[in-house]
Length: 73
Image (cartoon, rainbow, N blue to C red; front, side, top):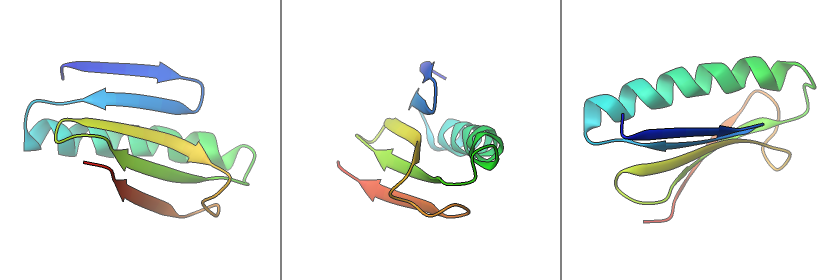
C-alpha cells in the first residue's frame, strides 16, 4: 500500500496494483461495515478518484446495509 489515511468515517486509500486494490478495499469496507452498524443509518460510498486512489466513507445518502460506487476518473 502506498498510503492509507483514516479520518473518522472516511478512509483514503492509494494502491499500486490490482491485488493491493482488492485487499485494501475489502479490509476497509469490513471496517466501515462495523462502524456503520453503530448508528445504523448510513451506508458505504466508494469513490474511485483515479486509477490508484479511492475514498471510502460512511454516507447518509446511501441506505444502511448498502454499498455504492462512484467512478470519478
